[in-house]
Image (cartoon, rainbow, N blue to C red; front, side, top):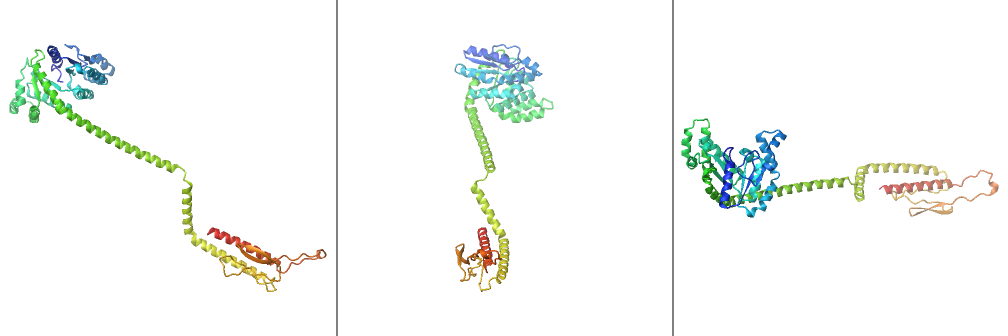
Length: 424
């Protein structure tokens, strides 16, 4: 990874030549869709998958937008690239990825993060940050490159090696002194009168600790100077990857799995709650059982009995008074017909236990009338007259009409008493 024009593609060609010289097997992947010439033959080339110019034309994009879109399209098929690498994993010594010239396109895009994490999850990985040494001799430019490298290292959390390229043109010893001695860098800042001097001075104070654990080496893509030292640093980066990155990755995966379990538990609890609500709604929508109806009806009748007890008692009292008055009138009317001293009293049921049963004259023939287990006697019908007297007006026997009426009233009284007992 590096700024545009820092010499990444040329450096990749020199690394490929070093691998062949060392008889090492390497695998090179080109991720720059806009490059027009490559001094080496990559094993996988993004240009064979995505046509950069067609993407710009089809989507109406500029150069940077076309590169970003092409990289996004290629990232959707990167699982196939991983499949090729896994098949050759036992036969390969190194895998190199050449990123696009625009550093922000790869570093801060979703596709760049996907590719980086996919590679780092399956292979020991480190980031080689390439700096253009002749352009970094200015303190502000040097600080800008250091800030970029620091942000990339903390974003990827991978081991990093800083490569000062083009040392055949500009030596990098001055940059190494600035990284090792803060006062030397501040002295160079005093000679710079630009408006960004104060900001650069503050950033130098922050990055002083960052330099302490940062691997760096000067290289030349043209002459090959410093390339052997670069491979030595790669061996140290592999040990750092196993010592720091893998435990951190395992802890991150465990946290992610725990969060996922908690999320699934919340979702399941939510689903159970919703299902319980649906079950309650279904039970409420079903018609009530017969036992529930009887229980509700019985409770309703009990409430009504409590509320209407006084009203019913008053009504029953009025009915009893009316019946007593009715029977009293009947007894007064019957007094004329019972001249022989017959005494009639009507039994009023269990509500009047002091009243005697019906008593009739012993001179009359007896017949039985039974109501609710009580035996009552009344005279039989008068004897039939002979045919010779049929033309004369017949006079009813004394007391016969009164007996029938009283029997009818007794039946009525018994029926009313039965209905009152049923209501109670």
